[in-house]
Length: 194
Length: 126
Image 1 (cartoon, rainbow over the protein chains, first blue to last red):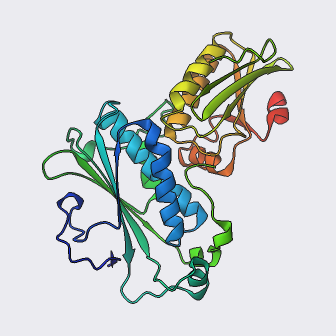
Image 2 (cartoon, rainbow over the protein chains, first blue to last red):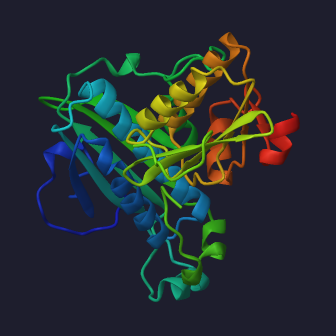
Image 3 (cartoon, rainbow over the protein chains, first blue to last red):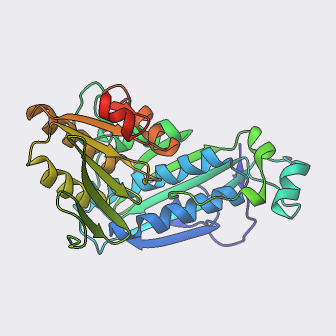
């Protein structure tokens, strides 16, 4: 079981479920599509820094984008002034060690996380998580693909109601071993964009 | 906003960092979006495609070479354009997809639904 990378003594954050540790990064943004590019660039850049391969970074950024889009469109009905929170935890398997190549590429000896946990929360109307699903892919029509894309690119996806108001989406992406081999600081790219 | 400096038969418009240009080429209308197509940009692309499609071109080519990123809202916009094209007997062809853009079509299993060419030259004869 992967554990949060931090060792903070702060009390558990009630907004993040049972993780028990405050996130390493917490971004609050308003439900305005103008901020989508910034959010996915942040998440993609963080994933890159934490040792994820370029392709995985792009997928993580895409999943966050799709999740935020769903909140804006379906949760908030396109209202642009409602809050959304994106929280990130690097998860580390006990005893895991960073490879020499990856450590050198990152310019340090920190342990790379084995996975990234990203939680998206909102204050939108609560719905039964069971009804949050993709449309039938055989049915060719605009829309309804966001949930399918999120589930296709992330390793674990869980929707749930928050304790009092709003919904919470928890996504986990595991880092593949080959990511270490591709780590190269000179090859840093932007994610979510060009 | 239309750019008055371009030749007749062409237009260019921009919304923030995202722009759409269109030109006539050998009987086809070529649309060239530039920038990331996400929920912020896709309504503008939708509007521009609708405007172009009202003239019922025989062939409509959307060159995505200048699009480094697209999310499902962009895909939905192109699905809508495809459905409108079919109603009007317009041949809609996508081309110039970068890998990241192509992958979202593959994830959505739409890569075989659209006619996709490598570039505009190929899209002219598909």
